[in-house]
Amino acid sequence: MAKRIEAVNVSAYYGSFRAIDNITMTIEPKSVTALIGPSGCGKSTFLRSINRMHEVLPGAKVDGQLMIDGQNIYDRDIDVTAVRRTIGMVFQRPNPFPTMSIYDNVVAGLKLNGVRRKAALDDACEKALRGANLWNEVKDRLNRPGAGLSGGQQQRLCIARAIAVEPQVVLMDEPCSALDPISTLAIEDLIAELKNQYTIVIVTHNMQQAARVSDRTGFFSIDSTGEPGRLIEYDDTAKIFTNPSVKRTEDYITGRFG
Image 1: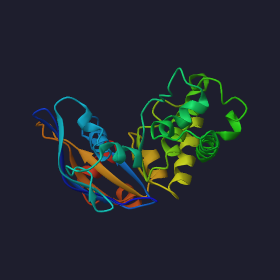
Image 2: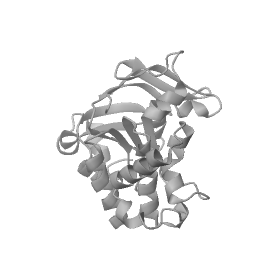
Image 3: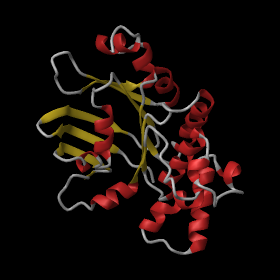
């Protein structure tokens, strides 16, 4: 079941450097939220904070509250593995496990979670590949290496891997930046389908993509003094792109800066 995400005064650090400052926003279930802004403004840092991937880096930490359906995932008694199990992640470049077959790529997370019954794994593999619109293209070569697929197919394989464990949230960090236009369109169509089941947050530098795929958009930015990244404006996507409330947002979207 898709989950609501609430960030309250979230700041993230790399050692003593504060990358993002006091981010507060609510992301509704079964929606697509796009995070846009210039390079280095903290979009990806915030995204990785949502599934506690940020703190994997040495010296990195997160302050504030980040709640999934009211539960702060940074509480001391939270099982981090369980958090990451419910929040899938798709990265900028397709990263199928290179030595694994298509089948084993998809079910890797399930096996880590203790699923061993072949019938259950087979069903989950087919369901995830269908969900990623990849089943018909690969159903006759599931035992071939995942790394042998095209770039667009590899990214859909990574999405299948993310949804196979049935998360409630799917995070995507520039999932189309390494893909050609046709593969990009396939991923965008897939995102539109997946939001019927998941809460999706996508980081993108592509303004047209943000306008096409998202229900709401958050604009992050930094200033020239080296201040940390901040959430400048967060609203319905149609309003952000046609009538933003903050001039800085308008300047970025129209290409005047960034």
